[in-house]
Image (tube, rainbow, N blue to C red):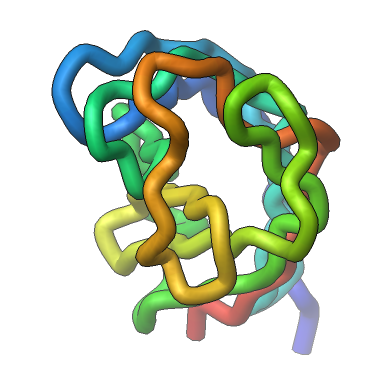
Length: 130
């Protein structure tokens, strides 16, 4: 049996939760092979809102590459208050196709209010959608 491959890109904006955050735009690229998807997100930064805990996509991923269960992985280079933080953050992809990037591995640390934050490097995550 053959394995289907789907390659593409999708544009998305990302906004910090909390009040007053700014929006940053990026084009994400992906490749789906069978039931596995590799998603690449270029570095993305914006200005945080008040009490922001995540930088979230405003545009859901296409249905063909959405996971059937929440997927998460490490973000190795996170920026907070215009500086790279020690320790990894976490990226989560919901079943609805929304991407969330958190400052720490638990997703509970807040970003500094009204400061530049996001990811310092491109992030790739491979996940199962079957």
